[in-house]
Length: 391
Image 1 (cartoon, helix red, strand yellow):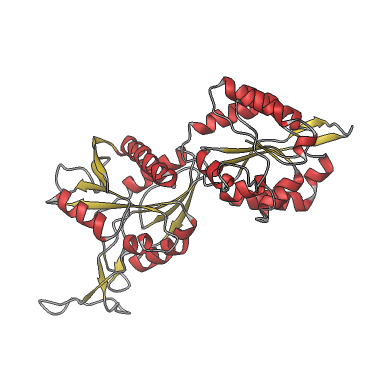
Image 2 (spheres, rainbow, N blue to C red):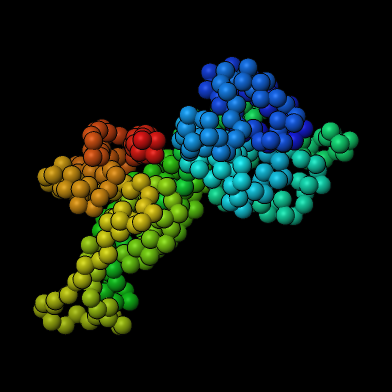
């Protein structure tokens, strides 16, 4: 928890007390200005840990303290977050421990603003808040009411009990603030203006995964091939049709996301030539020349800034060997494999079962409704994603 320099810093003491009462392990960071309002000794007594305030401390055991703090935390709360603190974070400044900690943090970040009502309503403050929200920061409050300066309006820091309630609720969302990219559905590879090559994928599994990720608190973008499904709630949908369009849509966004789940059934081949007019039925036989499509999964996994990459493998035989080979060859973090065919679930079915593999292990998710299966898979992905990022 980080405390910046505002009169609402006195509320931060009660906030630490309430968090510790809920068995939350709290480490406190204070700015120099915050220490003018409340002493570090208060927070040390309440949290049970020494307070951190210096960015560069030659006497400390760890000279890179801001990095170790950032990796230790499951969640970063800045309360109060002053207008100055919000402005510095939104512009990427790092001139003290708090702002540097914010830049180094890979965990979900929450801010509880506190400032004069005129400062809160100033357009530049709102622009800074919008920028931070676009980067995944969650805001709690502020509330409206009488302020220490004697004025009335929005800018009061939310009450500690309300902040604790929201944080505990967010803790039940293990992907809160994390950006997840999902691809789903089939692709259509055109032969002429009326015909195309496709597969039996309905998109149900991918859509269920996007829904489950959003339920877990993630900011989800779904790149979808042509399906007859309603867009999941709280999910941004990018509609594509061909494998090339899906490749472009995914690669444009992958580096900006922490997790990519490639659940789409992308065509392996597409016609080398697309006829401009409808092909007429004439000869007894005809031939098509097909060319290999771009490998989306491998391309994402090999990006310089690659997300935690999860692939899918739908197989009719030798499922485990094919899945493990794909995991290694494409440098994936995880792969979910399922049987397809009669009575196997999978394509165009409401049920499915998965065998999930990652470099250090595997898990079997039994046949069930795809919505429940997706939630089980998201829990497993979340676990392995956090393990990798805290190693």
